[in-house]
Image 1 (cartoon, rainbow, N blue to C red):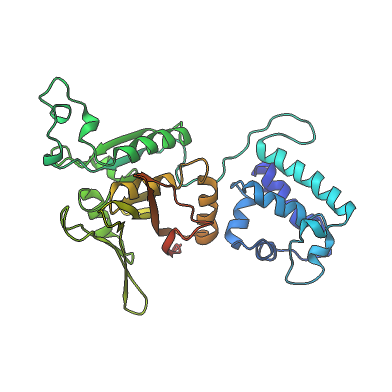
Image 2: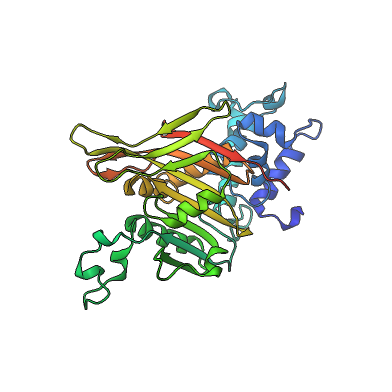
Amino acid sequence: MAGDSPPLAERLRALRKETWPGVPLTQTHLARAFGVSTALLSSWENTVVPPPVRLEAYATFFASKRSVEREPYRVLSAGDLAPEERDRRNVLLKELQQLRDGTDATSGSLVEAPAAHNLWQFPPDQDIVIVCARLPEELRQSTFADPESPDYVELYTYADLDSLVELVGHVRMCNPHSDLTFRTTDERTPLKRDDNTAHLIVLGGVDWNTQTRALLDLMDIPVRQVRRDGPNGPLGGFEVSRDDGGTEFFSAELDQGGHLVADVAHLYHGRNPFNPERTVTLCNGTFGRGTYGVVRALTDKRFRERNQEWLDERFGDAESFSVISRVTVFRGAAITPDWALTDACLHTWSRKGTE
């Protein structure tokens, strides 16, 4: 019901339905004018907060009836607006921005602003479990990784530790009312039954992470991770099955000195096969810096909103989706991929829900 919607959503819905009573303006009309999916625009009229750039489009569109003088409807260039239209746009944009920021434009009082769509935000009070691989025995030859040593530190036994640290802080920030735990795939202490039916976030590829390997075997997706053949063997990568029966292969890139210059990573998000009311998210690269880069795509404050909007526009209400991404490595550091404005995205796939 409209009365149960956030104030911004109600205002956006009212703009569409009431601005020009004699003009039929559906969500599909407006979505086409904005260049987004109908599902995404519908979400803005419910609980998802649109990014600031979309509020500018709303303000420009509804500032002039010329936007709907013929189909397909369009968003005029701001420079094409007449002075009175420009004034109308500025007033409307300020109102929408205040509603987005949680301020009632008419009274100046604070109202509760809903959170923007966020892959790492889950419903309150639902458990979240992050699973990393355990470092192989030969890489745990340190007193800090030896449980018998007084210097033992458990985290020294975790693979993809940089990704884990990045994600634990961010997921806890986004889900203050949920229990978050993290653990490794140590065969001596396998995941508990309840862990497998929570919101699962799995870090790292099939070389070391048996949880990634097992989950990919259960999922009907056209992406398969090919294991690396040792430190001096083939790099491995991701093989994609095409609709025509052929395949594509995406692999990391090394320079002539054997240094990593670009990794390839896979982001998958969908229903948990053990509990359809929960989700599974996989972040796995050929190397650790690929995993870290694809995690940062949705945690890095410079890129996360733009990348999230890109996901929303591309996949809409898909039940599950995957992205294969290039992660540039510059002077040893993984650079956060920008899916919206660069060619970092190598392959996408999605599946609509069956309900």
